[in-house]
Amino acid sequence: MINFLIINKEDSSVEKTVANSKSAIKRIAIAERNRLRNKAYKSALRSLMKKTLNAVDSYAAEPNSENMAVIQETMSATYSKIDKAVKRKVLHRNNGARKKSRIAKAVAKVTAATS
Image (cartoon, rainbow, N blue to C red; front, side, top):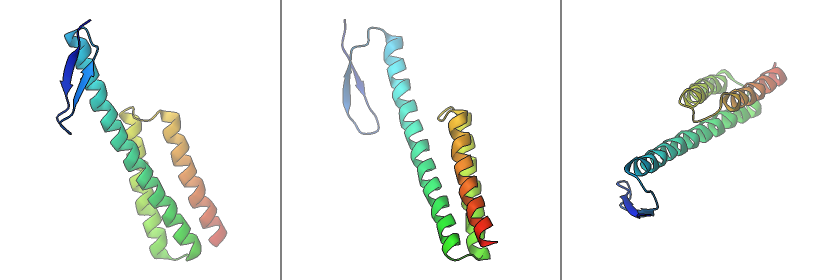
């Protein structure tokens, strides 16, 4: 068993692995790259969902066309990000569908209550 050092370019850290082959070292590097990309996607997605739900709450408190436009804009951006995350296999398709459904349900509830 040979220990290898992997140097992380982003934060200049050095990791010690127990990989035995060149391909295993490469897979470790690829897995780390994918983990960081997935983390960024999920973080952006959580932020967009919060932004959309906050827009829904502000519309519920003060229903007007400006707040509805903000809801539509943020909802569109959130749906797009969810679809891209599902396409890139960051999220499972059922998980993406559930997130979109929750947003749609919140919007429908508020618009039905104000109408």
